[in-house]
Length: 342
Image 1 (tube, helix red, strand yellow):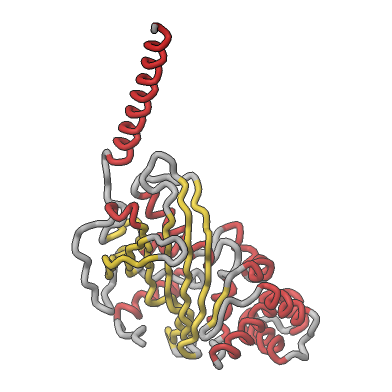
Image 2 (cartoon, one colour):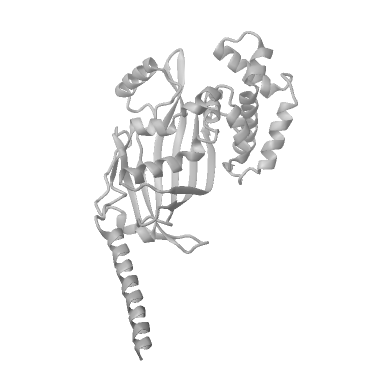
């Protein structure tokens, strides 16, 4: 009888401990509850957005030659308008084919001449030898653009794309934006794992390319409500070639947007405030919510409900512009608000 009483007592202690643990965990998750996804994400200013888009210091020296981009592009999931994801084997084969050719190839010669004029390199062979990887990637992209869109963008736009095909470039934008949002709200995920990432290119015309980047991520942050959640991001923007002066053109980022797919399990961390009605030409200071889709969108694979929040972002300033050019650009934008209308 004594042993039975001890046994029952042990079971009761274990159950009591388990209940206390559950209550404590629930308290941790619900106490100090704070909205994560507000109507205005003040941390995402133009300065921050530009920094997220910019080329990191360890990649910067490599950008001109595009060595990292050359090695990384077969690893990317790339789509073109009216086409599926380009197979990595196809990209590797194309890069290899161009590598085996010389300046007798029309596309290679076109980009070599362009870079030669841009950098004032008189010897074309020396220009090609130094910048062969950038030239080859550009030629391959032009071939794909022509096949899928029947158009080739201005070389300046193609080069801006090449600048960001390295392993910390466009493919990491969704990760960088989500991490910034979470950290600003006091969440420090142990890991944000990218489970899917697709970069989609659409040529609007020879002076404008639309880019859309879809990224799915799994969050690891124990003892927080966001632990083991799957969040989706979609980033869209246009690369637009603009005449700043009669003798100076530049590629600018326009119509930059971020859409977040928030799973049902953390829907209560979405603001209940009304969204801000923005005008097309409104100069916003930070990420501003322009659409809140309360309709539930189910994932076919996981049957998981998502709520979609669309934010208009301040357009990042192209990293290729000098301070003087940025100052001139700001004056131009101030005097011509209709510059970027489609």
